[in-house]
Image: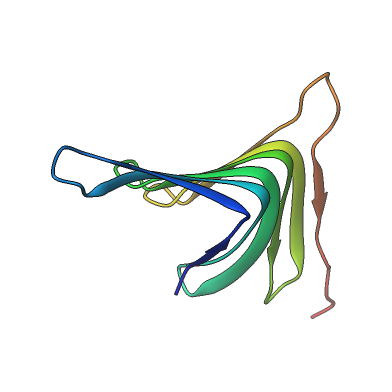
Length: 105
């Protein structure tokens, strides 16, 4: 199950009152499952677009894949669930950070 926590949540709906977009602000934290892997993360603002099936974390964006402890840091992280792609962006030419634990086999 996906879990979203924040101090403020705005839910946008279509004319039939079906949710099309969620925006979580102020201490936004989440836990999501993608392809059997569990991720936790946080950011200043978290947006879930129901139609595109994308997550967007803005401001102090952080994601941690719990099984492997891989971490992503940036100003903005976009997760496209349909395409299984992550895009990490940083402003002011600052580098995005990736942290991976390398294991010997």
